[in-house]
Amino acid sequence: MAEAYYGTGKRKTAVARTWLRPGKGSITINQRDVDDYFRRETAKMIVEQPLVLTDTYGSFDVNVNVSGGGISGQAAAVRHGITKALLQVNPEFRPILKRAGFVTRDSRIKERKKYGQKGARARFQYSKR
View 1 (cartoon, rainbow, N blue to C red):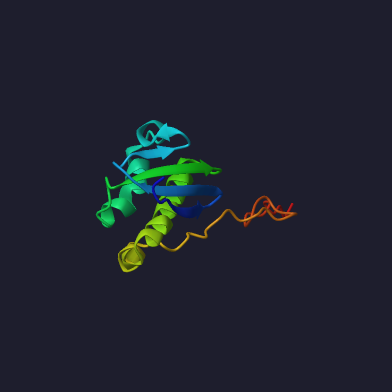
View 2 (cartoon, rainbow, N blue to C red; view 1 turned 135 degrees about the vertical axis):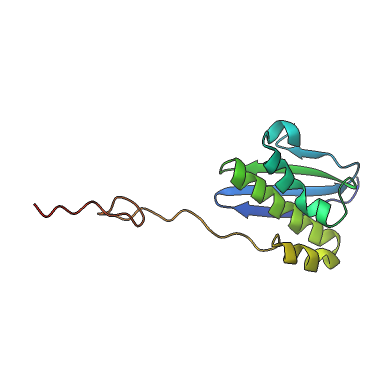
């Protein structure tokens, strides 16, 4: 079996376990083709960004298991996972991917609702009378 490179990508509540193997460039997400899984063109573009940026598009078969979150969060998690796997393939890709902002995990998550309040920051309306 050919050598596989692994990377875990995260975004919001989505987690993507990503494997890169030398191949023809097929991208499989949860046993489905990328075009079948992500209907939005922007989501597909986000997933392919690290491969296009490093000129490795078409030279690796990408296999991803992704869970949690929504379409946008999952697409960003897959991108992060592919980036981390590419860094295992060739550490010289790091400056290129870092400049694009793909190496850093986007740590923004939903803030919890506080007790005695309507939401995380929103308060109940004050009534003077």
